Image (cartoon, rainbow over all chains, first blue to last red; front, side, top):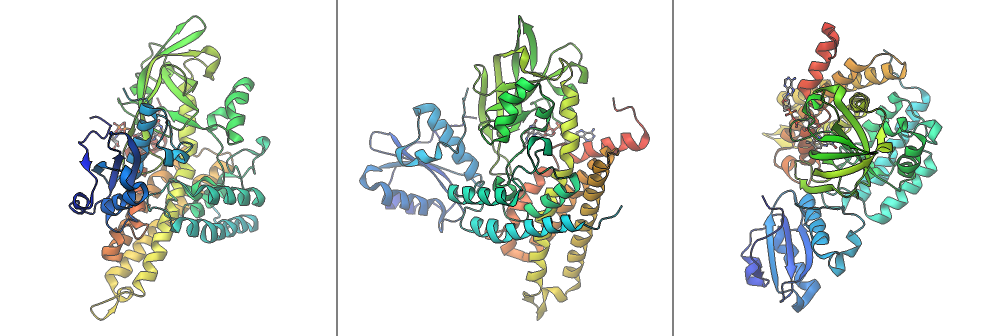
Length: 111
Length: 388
Ligand SMILES: Cc1cc2nc3c(=O)[nH]c(=O)nc-3n(C[C@H](O)[C@H](O)[C@H](O)COP(=O)(O)OP(=O)(O)OC[C@H]3O[C@@H](n4cnc5c(N)ncnc54)[C@H](O)[C@@H]3O)c2cc1C
């Protein structure tokens, strides 16, 4: 089983977000070139799970955020940490607005 | 056995309870229900407080600058410190500091300088890497990670599974087979920096516990200088085993906190929730659940305190520690299960901490030796086995 989030990117817009169920999970947001600009989770404090979290990402990143992919999981905290560590492994650092997480997360070296 | 608390113990229990209620619970309220850490400013503020209280580094022996608490007082504190949502695996979110891996107190002076003292100062973290994919209940026979000597170095190849915190650790206490002996006399303990070439944290192992997760490790020609052996070559299993026995008492005590809290919540709920024209508290079915909870909680507490008192008196406590681990983990699981039932729908939501305790307590019946292994330990003692 691969540990990366390897689903296809979907267009980040209200129609696609509204079509999602309000479940908990993790997601990545990318710009038009496919560069990941956010790795996030939808936790139990979100009123409508992943839908609410993605709506907030649009507010935060505006037009820059154009694509998303996601995974539903009740283990959103440990899966989020895993995705952050994978991001550091793949790109050397976390997305700009998440760099304060660097000191909290650990180190992974996937095979 | 005398379970009365001394004045000093009562003062420590009261202070810890007040700290949890007035500092930890409010700081936790706005966090995600599965969170594993406080906001950094809260963490720093509360560490300052525990230092002022003289409680920082709870498990550090007095000769190393810690408060030097006895096992009984430490167990009483563990019962209090776990009475919040994250309390089972993150008691008070670590604001009382850590003591590092207990085995490092047996290390050489040079090893202490390099790993123990930085850990006590909060500069380094360690992890304990014993279990392998081949099994954790009987590690002496299951360990397949192999080490061979090459000049002044040992070379290790193999893997470990379910190792908590290895991704964040600076070093690991790692057990490998270093002789042809297929059992306990063929295992050596190594202290290894986790950034050593050949040491890989391959993945997070997702379990019922969302934070403080486990990981899978792999070693590929991991070279370790011989001065990084802890204790003797082929003498590592005794080091692992000692840790597991000692660890059982605080491990058991930590389960009692969530059970006490869940019971208090359920009593309050039963006294205010009405069905079929009367309060839940007036229904015998509910009263009996609350009574069964009380019996489970007290039974677990007595077992833990008995084991702790024997340890403090320097008596043999292996059977008592195994019994405490078995009774407390199983009893707390039953209590939280009943409390969820009493709460109905809200009991299974993330609005209350019950569902987190329910998930995390289930791990406690497996971790640090499954219930069946605790029975095996007790049976050997009772029947007078040879412990081979
Ligand atoms: C979340 C988590 C964190 C962990 N963290 C660590 C860690 O930091 N470091 C570390 O080294 N290990 C860690 N472990 C491993 C843990 O100690 C082992 O899972 C445990 O010892 C059981 O080993 P096993 O899973 O291989 O089960 P096995 O040894 O395969 O046993 C499976 C089951 O068989 C039964 N059984 C075993 N022996 C007997 C017997 N004699 N009689 C009857 N029934 C028996 C028990 O029910 C047991 O649960 C962790 C595990 C978990 C789940």
